[in-house]
Image (cartoon, rainbow, N blue to C red; front, side, top):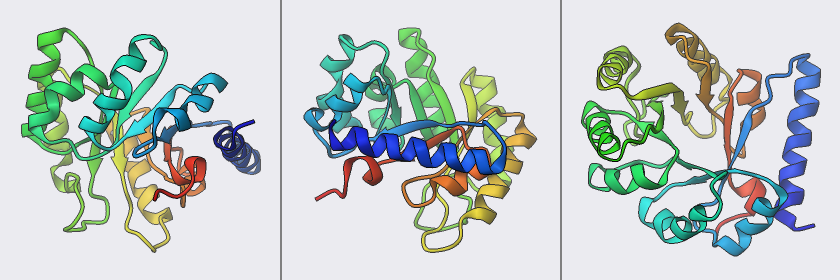
Length: 219
């Protein structure tokens, strides 16, 4: 069994044990963040039956996944990195989920491009939950305005996404995100990475984005 599959199974086991402790069965989908890794590292996971994969950069994803997805229609590709408006038309064609919508300008461009090809992308609104200047994401006070604008555009907004501040206990941030998500009536949320996915699971994240714990450290 390939190491990536062993690592995935270990993560699944960790989540199941933790959910058993919490006495809940809110099992999240695991997005294997395959950015910078080539298809030969990803293939064992696909052959194992894993379908959710995450990429940060549109151009890298185009080169890696375009032909492969044509023959593997079950794969769900998630754009988890910042999306520039000049790359939207390419992203809309390739990706099934976009986790990083944080402005009206970006929302409008996505709506325009998906209407051209009659495709409906599933959207997460990225929240700058720690109010960090260096991070992307909409400020909490502007979130409702962006959400209502997305609804006007007909975008399929399914939940909220965040990246909490590094080197700080993420529980308070995940708890705040859970409350925000519930306030908007969303059933999906994108929270948790290799270092904090169990914390995110505790706060009912439905998608966790895990890279290094599956693929190893990037060179």
